[in-house]
View: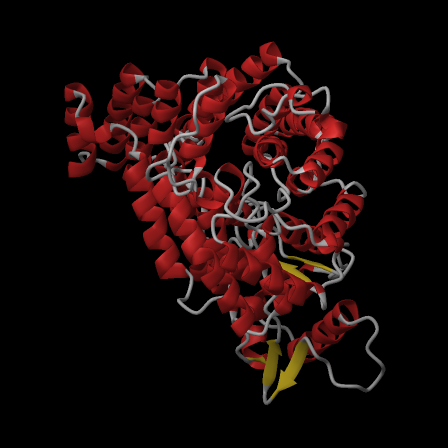
Length: 599
């Protein structure tokens, strides 16, 4: 049962239907008990509150009103069983409930802007509207009215702090018209008008406030209004909207004050922060990677399987490179996701965990990674969740690098990602789609299209402040130019980019490919993880899954020719034949030219 006093006194049942509270005195009894906030109101006090001159039998009438209210409020209560809502205690009655709109309003009035807006929406009219003249209601009516007026003004302050001055103006205008003695409301309205570029209107509002206060109340405006008028005339700098830094500081401080240090929601908030941090640049990516596993571990230690699943799945940062930056951490994340899957049956949560397994298993030939991607896709395509589907498509793409000749499949994923993301405002995945198409069109020898996708990715990155995108598009243009200075310039961007899985050995590998293409000796450099293919000293391993798979097989061909290793040449030919019509440029970073040359 819900009770409402922010307007006419009402009650609603479980289905939200109004309850018939009978006559005005029945409603007065209910209202009087709500005013008491759970305290016992003696029956004799109810008599005095209901009648100026109580008639004979007034006490019996009160008992009749209470009995009638009990039948209305608890229609399913068995005869002669104690009431649970409107109870008898000692010499009087009390209402045992927390479900009163005024009390909900009080709790939410100090919250966030959405919470405050929802709280204000509870008001259907003046508080205790049908008992405006009753002495017992006046103090509570006045208190609630003042709280509402403050809430309207606080809502305006929050809108101004968020740079939404234009949205604050209409309600403030109505507010000061109805309550002209509220000096702070006049101040907020003038400030809102000023921040929307309406300096003349702001000054007119302040003149109007002065006139209303002097003419109707006989008082001069306070210091705050006078100072604001002076500041507007001088266009004072501090009147400008709050900077992003200030909004951040105030929001962070409010979060620290409101959310307890041990609250579990902090973990989920932390992952959301890390998700955004990861795309802000090298330092942010490194910090996000460092703290991500700690957040997962903390969630597991709390013993909350659902929380752990949410913390793992919330880190849906688009991934464009197929070699891990931290293999040990990736393995730990995969293990945690597998543990979370055992007790998770919610489809969307399962899909996110499976996609995480597929993404963090990059570079692995384990069947589990590909199976996880397929299962995640099957689930995601059955749900109406574009963001989830984009995340899962990233995982599916990560598992289409296990053999040569899959550039067309990766291209198709890029096409879907660009379309899906553009329709649903998923700009990070739209960038990912363009980068995937840049890579795949390069492999398919369609550089005009690849150029288009590089430009589209750069434009989105500039609009949404995604600096790491430029690392990939600059490397792409270096590949197109195919000169040592271009590769070295691109490599400079990797310093401090926070992507060791991409950076390690990449510049030496690009230079080796450039030398081989132009008939030059392979330079004596540290090739890092690519040494077994560029400078083999023992048996050459099979090329690992990834965007460099075809390039490493081409290097294998080169080494096998020098060794006259017919068996290895046969293996390389079998591996590369599916990509016979492609270029070894599927990474979008470097190239060894047409694969047919090596076949």
